[in-house]
Image 1 (cartoon, helix red, strand yellow):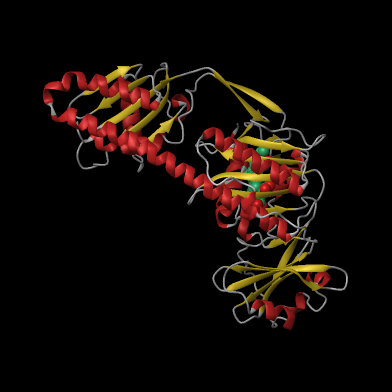
Image 2 (tube, rainbow, N blue to C red; image 1 turned 180 degrees about the vertical axis):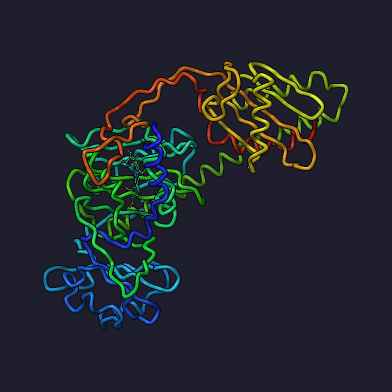
Length: 482
Ligand code: BLA
């Protein structure tokens, strides 16, 4: 990637999506303060609610809206088919705007089908990884059938921030398959991910619909974090066009406070879903989130128990000094098998012990110096040469390093090492290719092709799994023994 392309991605990361000052024009918005006085309206509000226009800013809400507004207590309220404007029925959705304003969104209403109970769709528990895979597929298949969208994907985030499509359901002759393809982290900026933790879903029913500005009396821009109609970033519209997707909705698959995956539906046509379908899918996704969290907690507890019993074992052995000679070798062997590593180094102020295919001394020194500059106790890479150019090439490409938390004293450090391994990654388009585009307003754009592209990796180790950090943090107790 060249400097211009990197600059483009950095600019995307800075885009304040919630302060776009505009909405998707298939609905209208009225923002009111606590007293029910209108502070902003979308420029075309008159098309949806003939009593209102941009001249209404500063006035009180009309009675019908006021009656809904009065019921708002801070959480989303969705009134399905509540209004009619002579031409169409409208849903009215209320959401908070900052601490003391409320957004009232008017959306075309769609007729609500009868739905199964959300509880009957998924099982009561997930017992193992095979089960988890099956439940994911059930989820994807059910949502594909219910919504009729052409492609439904379960897009899982890897520790690197890149993502991989783990499950998919595609209609025949549809958009094409992304199953098992990987997509770079920069496709979904951090700010967009953070919004998925605050909202259970995001609808972009028609990427071809223009956005329309909000008009207020002053230059203030309402915070649209929770608004259904928040306008779509121009970069993402471009991305959807390049993908051939006109309509998409994504639900958040989330742990306690991290975004684990997105469940997304795509279609080449503009499509809508009635509120009760969106809400029903939300219930099912919530149920899935609950099952996933329980499963992950159980896995963590098993891991914790296993590590704990090893600690106990090694602590006892450390207590028995006559064993010391064999102990390092035994510990190193255990660490290598637990972390699936090829080598291990322990560095203390007094000694440096290496076992297996380990980093050379100069490289250890470079990593130690680098880690001093960071607050984090753990540093993990599967591509040492790229992330921290060390002086000489060696076989080791993967490092998972831990330093003890005692800053004042010289401290012990542990390095798990993995050799470089040749392997391939299948991407949905070349990830290093934001491209020159033919759009003069956007000289660089998201990549144009999402064709499968195979990267052969030479300088990487196999990737460290998501528990590596947790396991390393538990090793801190062991470091104190040296
Ligand atoms: C948003 N990007 C998104 C979203 C997805 C993706 C799912 C959430 C919105 C939605 O549901 O459409 C990406 N979509 C994917 C991926 C797959 C998919 C990876 O189907 C894989 C199968 N996008 C870029 C670049 C930038 C960018 C280079 O490619 C900026 C540097 C930005 N993506 C971007 C922005 C949003 C976004 C700004 C937020 C859009 C919004 O909510 O307004």
